[in-house]
Length: 438
Image 1 (cartoon, rainbow, N blue to C red):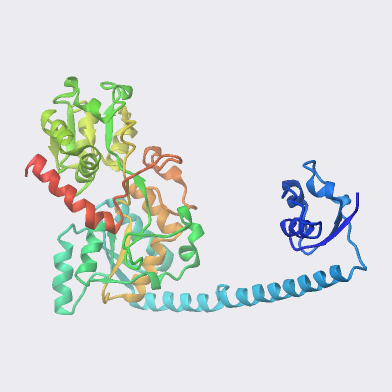
Image 2 (image 1 turned 60 degrees about the vertical axis):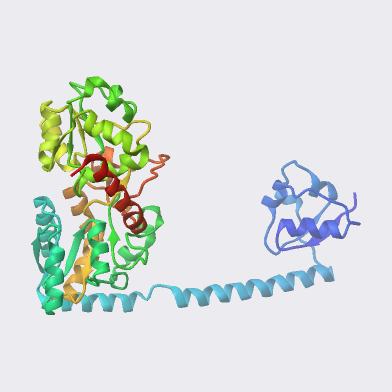
């Protein structure tokens, strides 16, 4: 067969050029040919070689000189490659991290924060967390942390202090709802422009290749953990996990009077489970479960876990992992059950970080924010709260496996997004109140 000379920048273009110079004949865009192509090459081949589905050996392609058209093509591609190389170099120069400037800014922040000497943080009243953050930040930077374990009433204090022009709190760590309220009351400061550490700013260091913000503007609330809500636990000695393969199994007569729960009528773990159940199964199911099965409520997280451990109520809803693990360490046979129709919803627990407007210690607050979101800070958070960090370099071995989002499982409810909290949650909570009463 006659040999055909083709100059091309890719195999697909080589095939197209060959077709155009061969009387309009159509040839297959063979995968083997495509894989053998070289950028900017001038090829010599037979029609059989272009069309064959047999693997093409590299030595059957030959460079060829002396063709004016081939030289013209090679010259054109050489110019294109030069332009491309220069462009890449310019882009790298413009976009690469200015490590010197970044380090200088960071050193200045640390120095100013040390001058301020302390930072005031409000977070959940959990001893392991307050102690871990206080000692960890002091060890890292020599700066004192005044940790406040105030509850929802902290908003009233923040609002009163803001009106008086005398704010006393720098940072808040906790749930999404409070951060959205702070935003609405103009009490929250932007923090996206205060993430200085490269290990915090770099998306590849976070699961899913991105930082997760609870606010739609992606500026005020950084969510640092993500986990599957602890909806349902049983005492294995009394209730076999396989006896509850569906959430509807909880409606069976044998479980009447044997279920305990954190109160779903108030904010917290109970309400998170209640919202999930009413969204998936509706009011009728919720009424049959909580009222029809005579579920006993408590507002004490420890008591929920203890009920299951002692067998007082061998099935419990909305038990938090920190309490469950305490009893598991004592040998109690507590097991998380995942019914086929209820894989669970995603939450961020107490891990969301926000800064208060006009903080009294702005530099120490920014430093604490970066440290809190760093590997060191997140290891403390995960270990204390038993919530898996969204950082990829924080070991999941720090938390129970039942709170880890599983690959391939579709979690259709994310309770830690602004849209869900503003548009969905209030309606679900209203439905819960009507279904269960006050």
